[in-house]
Image 1 (cartoon, rainbow, N blue to C red):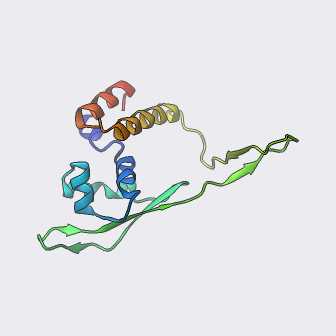
Image 2: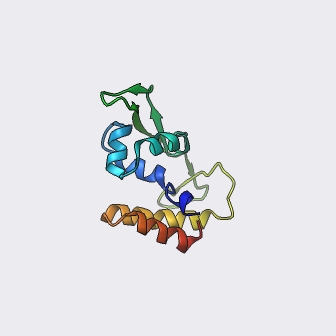
Length: 138
């Protein structure tokens, strides 16, 4: 269970570092304190298109150290909005959720909020991730 916990929230952490600019696999691994091979192996988990973002990867190449590397880029998508069908003074917009609700959705959202708070305050570490996983049963 702790092995699975090590890469929990990896997509969120990668998004956080990719907000500024495009980065190489080796640069992301260094910033997140993760082994480069582990990041390359787990990249298939965050290289998917979602409603709000998409992480794209360039072609793999061998860098000067002889290690396989690739470039990652974050692309943001504006969520679809729907208009409320009532007469109000102010327009109300809300997101249209295309996916069906999952039973553990709220638990995952709470864990993501807490993980985001830890990352933003700079207190995120492996120990904090383990505590978070134990707290929410991930």
